[in-house]
Image 1 (spheres, rainbow, N blue to C red):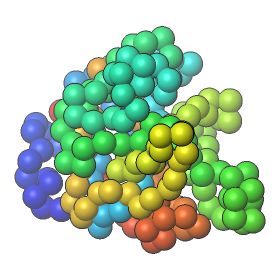
Image 2: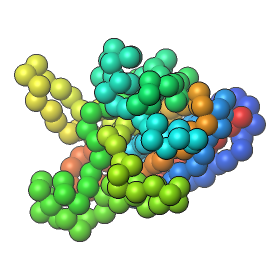
Image 3: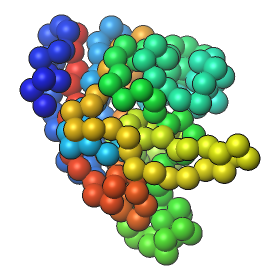
Image 4: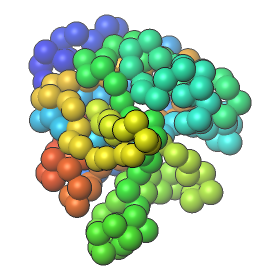
Length: 207
């Protein structure tokens, strides 16, 4: 944890630990950097972002994949909005690739796949945070999953494996506009995305 902090460039304006299964959101000003640190490893972090001045101009999974020409987010990639505006650029990444296609767990998914509709979910976390910004279910879109990948087979088959991050791994996102960043520290315990044990993460905003 200390090493990740020491490598921060600029002045730290926010530093917080998001508990296991918890959620977090904050406006990140243009030019600021958001660092997400997986403190204990193998923790999936579901992520959404919105133009702080126009909430309808939100993260676009398909356009982000098309413009970057890759299914994975990694260092050098840009996260785009539905109006194809740059939202964040990945300026540092100790993991190497992050998922763009799996979306988030929800009561529906937990019911259909595991028979547990009342288990806590990323969708519930997202809606809790979005309400703070005057948004709701209609503002939900497909999300990014940092520290997580879904292997895709030759015939398109998908699988869920543990997040590939190690303790202390991190990713830095530099804001290209004023952005509302929304995090669900994934609470899923019915599949191996969190190695069946959700753990805390740390978020640091620097300017």
